[in-house]
Each structure stands twice: as structure tokens, then as C-alpha cells.
Length: 80
Image (tube, rainbow, N blue to C red):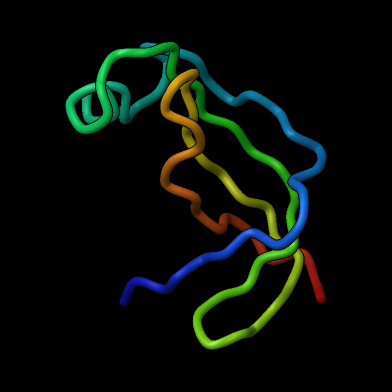
């Protein structure tokens, strides 16, 4: 089951996890979105899931200049 994830406010504590070919999904990202300087990043944000449940979570996503942030994933729930 795939839930809709909505980021509320800003993402804090942003870090880069991997860049370019060090990303496991690099070939898929290039195939779907196109070539670019792809980065896998993580941060902490308030997240709204599904019908309105809101909590703080560690989120991961991919981003590249010109493409923006893609494919947000909740990795860990940190609290309310």
C-alpha cells in the first residue's frame, strides 16, 4: 500500500548521503528523470500521511539541479 506523504514546513538537519554513482538507484534515476548531478539526501521534517496523521520523521529523497526533490521516503518516525 502506497501512502501520500506531504512535507509540512521546512526540512531541517539536511545532509547528503551519496552523490552520483554511489547512489544504488543511480541508473534508474537517470532513466526516469534524466542526467544530472543526483544526490541522495536526508533530513528531519513534519510529515502529513494519508488522511491527516501528522508527525516528525526522518525523510530521505533524491534531488538534482533542474529536477528538484523526488521520491520522498519516511525512514524513521521521531515523534509527534
